[in-house]
Length: 500
Image (cartoon, rainbow, N blue to C red):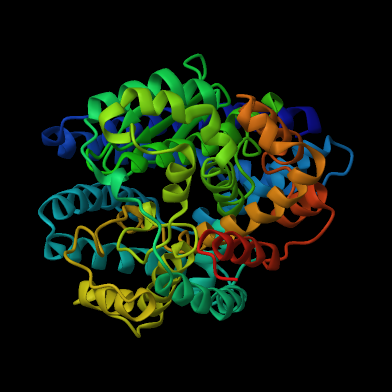
C-alpha cells in the first residue's frame, strides 16, 4: 500500500469514527437533559451497541498498522503525524480490551448514571453503591489489559492529564495545603462578608430569562454555534467546532449557582469553538488535556466572571430583573458576595479559596479506592469524615455529600485533580493576559470577547496539536508554576477580608 492509499484509508476511517462519535455525543446529551427516564433501559442497550460498533471501527488492525507508519513518516504534514501519534496511542489503549467487555462497560456506565440520579434524588447512597463497586472493578480489569509499567491510578491520571502522576499531584496539593489551609483559617475567623441576599427567593423562570437575554449574549454564546439546556449536573459537550452544547441548573434559593455554572460551561464551549476548523473531525479538534480544558472554564468563571468590571457591565440588568431581592444591594456588595469564602459541602458552589480542598478530598478518596485502603462500602461515611477533617463541616446528607458529582458513575477516575490543576493553570494565563491587555476595561465596556480572543490566540486555536507544557510556555513564556495560583488567592482573600 503506497502513501496515498494509506492516507485515503486513514481519512475515511477518521470520517467514520467522527460520525459515530457525533451520534453518541448527541444521544448522551439527550440522556442527561430531556430524555424520558422510563425509556433509559431501551436507549442504554442500543447506545452500548453503537459504542461497540465504533469500537470495532477504531480497533481495525489495518488502521493500527497505518497509524504506526504515518506517525513516523517525516515526509507528511506535521499535523497528520501528530494526529497519527495521538490516534495510535488511543487505539492501542483499547485494542487490548475484548469488545464484549468494552460494550458491557458502556452499558454499565449508563445504568450507573441512572442509579446515581435516583440515589441523588432520594439522597440514598445505598442505591448507587453496588453500581460504583461494579464500575471500579470494571475499570481495574480494563486498565489491566494495557501494557504499562505505571501503577493503576497513575494510568488513570495520565489519561486525563498526560504526564501527571500521583507523586506529582501529591507535590502540587502539598504546596496548596501548606499555604491555603492557614489562609482559610484566617478567613474563617475574620468578619464575614454578607452574602445572605444571594439566597433569597429568585424564581427560576426569571433567572433563565435573564440568562438568555443578558448573560449569554454578553458571553458571546450565540445560537448559531451554541445551545444551552438544563440538567442535574451541568456539563458541556460538542460534536464539532460549530455545535457546542452547554447545560446549567437553576436553584430558586441560590441565584449565583446558575450564573457561574453558565459562565464556567461556556468557557469549555469557547475552547472547542475556537479550535482551528482545519482540525474538525480529527483527534486534534479537542482540548489538549482535562487540566487545560478546566483552566479555560474556571478562567472564565473565576478570573473574569467574579471580577468587579464583569459585574459593572451586567449587574444593573440583574438588579432590574430582581428589584425586590437586589434593590438594596450595590454592585460592590454583590461582587464581594460572589467572592465570599466559607467552607461548604458542594464542590460546584464552592468559593475559589476552599475549592482546591474539595478536589483534594476526591483525589485522596480515589487513590484509596484503587490502592485498597478505602472501601466502597461505607464510602459515604468516609466522605463525611474527610469533609470534617479538611473543611470542618458536617455533611447533612448524601445528596450534598458523596452523591453530588456525576463523574464516578461513568468511571472517570483521575479527572477530579484536573479541576485544581486547571485553576492553577488559569492563574498563570491571567497574569500574562493582564500584562498584554486591559482586561478590566474590556469587561467593563462589554467587550468580553476581547478576553476570549486572547485565549483563542494563545491556547484555543491549537486544539491538542501541542501538549499542555508547550501551550503554557507558548502563552506565558514560562513552564507551569503553581506559585502564581497561590499568590493570586492570598492577595485576593487578604484584601477581601482585611487580613493585613
